[in-house]
Amino acid sequence: MVILSFNRLQRLTIQFVLIIVVTIAMVFGWGAIAHSQLPSLPTAASNNPHKPPKGVTRLGEYEIADVNSPLDKNLLFKVVSPTVFNRDEPPEGSLPVEVRAEEITQRLMRALDRANKAKQTPIISVATLNNRLILQLNDDQTTHSLRLVTVTEPDADYYGKTLEELAQEWQKILQAEVERIERLFSPQVLSQRVGQALQISIGLVLGSVVFWFLRRTLIRKQTVLQARYQEHIAEAKQSAVKRSQAIDTSEPEAHTIADGRSQFLEIIQRQFTLKRQLGIYSFLTLLLFWAFILVWYIGIVVIISRVPYLMRWSTDALARPLALLIIWFFISVVIRIGKSLIDYITDVWTTHPSLPLSEMQRIALRAATVSGALKGLITFVFITFGILRTLDIFNVPTSSILAGGAVIGIAISLGSQSLMKDLVNGCLILLEDQFAVGDVIEIGNKSGLVENLNLRVTQLRNGEGKLITIPNSNITDVNNLTRLWSRVDFSIVVAYENDPKQVLEILRQVSQQLYSEPEWRDRLPELPEVLGIDDLSHTGMLVRVWIKTAAMEQWRVGREFRLRVRLAFEANNIEIGRPQRISYNTNLDGSSSSLS
Image (spheres, rainbow, N blue to C red):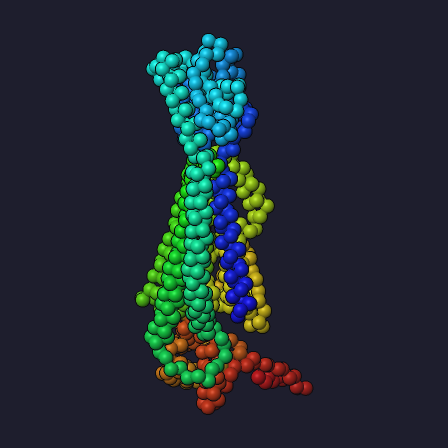
């Protein structure tokens, strides 16, 4: 037990560590890391050259792009450039606005590095270069000023200000940003925020331990309920197929049909009660998992937004990761609710009070396959939707993926036609209720008890104990010998010397006696019907009796009825028919005689 507990503890610990790593990677991995080179212009192969790229707004003759802070990517101001209608062939001397914005961002990154190294606060000043107003950074590290932004006529026209007024406004914005950077990277503030990040990290670890204990408790209860649920499933299956055994039992029939029906209903009700409890614990485990992810996500986002060296990824941490968490949380909850609804509908379908016992047993054994197929379909549909939404968040063209998937699907379907036929025919068998687990059927020249049924194959157990596996696509004609009720078609040939009325009366007496006994009454829904003489031949008179029985009881009732008929015929000197043989003997005088 100690070894098992240690192994389980080790496995759960590894799972939590993996979740933490994935969460951290999800936050950090999607941050756009700046590079020193300028971005290349989009090509016509990937984007429409006449459409502005993402992040660029087109207003007639102008295009606008954002310039963000190099520290945490907050918006500082907007820059404007003349519209470029074809980015594959831009006009000579023009610079697309997204390239200009990226160039300014890279210069601000360099300004951030210089501000961190400077002993005094750098100064943002307005200067003139080649008759154009520029904003530049001056510090005590070098005598060479760093040009940051060139104020252009389109910028002033867009803001409705003169070049000097706009330059003064941007100078104030950049000076405030430089002072903020210097303040955040000061040793006192930096140590304080790093300490806060460590406290948050410790809190996340302690919270993870609490989540781990809660999850362990839920899993332990789920394991106990799952074991009880499997026991009830086995009990229900045993109750459904026990009548298929063609051997006599020494145990007397102590229950009536109503008692057996109520007992089966009680088993099914307990089974679905346990299933609902399992569903509740599973839903709580799911919520606990997402609560764990959410706590770590919030903690990491707070740490990123507090530590200056990590603040550049704070905006990215609140964009795609949050959208993905919302999408997959919604999908997981919808899948869980869908499965619970399927279980509820299955419960109502299985425990219908107006159905006979045999039909409830059939539905109970059939419901597992149907509900499993529906749950798989719901899971597949919503996970596919989640994958497409995830690709859409990453700007991956889903239309081309769907087109390629359709081509691959057609190729796979052409290469596996037999498998598709099996699945389609399996669905039809379940929907039409042609047969179910526990039925005795005949398929072609094969027959036996249905032991397993899924969407692909049907497995039969014949009288010799052989397990026969038949693909569902090969099932065309099915003879169900145990659907709702069964019948013994009893026929016997008696000799002509017997009194026909006496023979029929003896058969009626045997039928009445069998029907009146409590041991056999629950197996015989109605009194056996003596049809009469069906045929006359050289062997004798063919007498037929129809005996309607409960499902799966025709073999046992048939054996008992034949035994009683044999004893009754012997007691009343009724002779069984036999072929008539005629021989001819010719005498010497030419006469002939016959014997029969």
